[in-house]
Image (cartoon, rainbow, N blue to C red; front, side):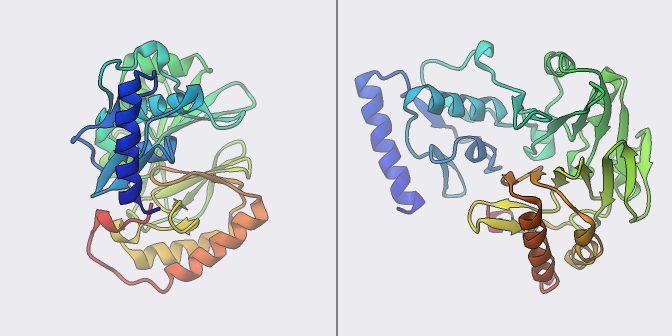
Length: 312
């Protein structure tokens, strides 16, 4: 079934759910949606894409599906996931959501970072690192602090720098960015320079990856977690690693060179991007796919910026 047909079917199911007064009925996506993909990541099969925006494919059934849609509502940067009669209250906010024992998804994505995902990384010492940032909110900062002292805020690139200083100041943390994007966070405490990898904390390595922007960086922790920013992501469309070639602001040729230089050094199981799908695979399988991605990117040529061409 294509998404247009699924959307029509979803609208019929939605109408039926509302007629029966079912608890799960009444969800919709309003016209502020910017098609950032966040809601579709969190509620796959319930929220899809049609006409360049997210739509309800069908209403949720049961507690688990309702929780997925609520998570989408709290993550949506434009607050476009709505309920016609029962808006979700703060007591139903599920964030941060644990992806495994060491990594949590922050939620509450920000319009000022184009709706990018951000993460919390727990360290064996009991401290926490934040990778990119959610929207700024004191209450959210307090919630994240309950997980442990936040020592570092790691920015992957300029597009995600908007709230970095405020969170770093609140936590008393160090703010990191690469020199290539330093003008987006000129008051950063730590500046990554050049293109060589650097260990910024025990078992946490920054790999400069110019391409999406001049100062793009990915962070690999424990040879297990790769926080890739906007350099590459898991596509649910192709079921493979992809680069967002149509929104590569700096240079697709530089991105190809960066991947060629770096891919063979990387070992990880979890891919945790700013935009696009997350994925966990065995490290050898991830390495194989990353090598194939590198070869594909070397064949790409510059193209006009086109957000609608991204294969989520």
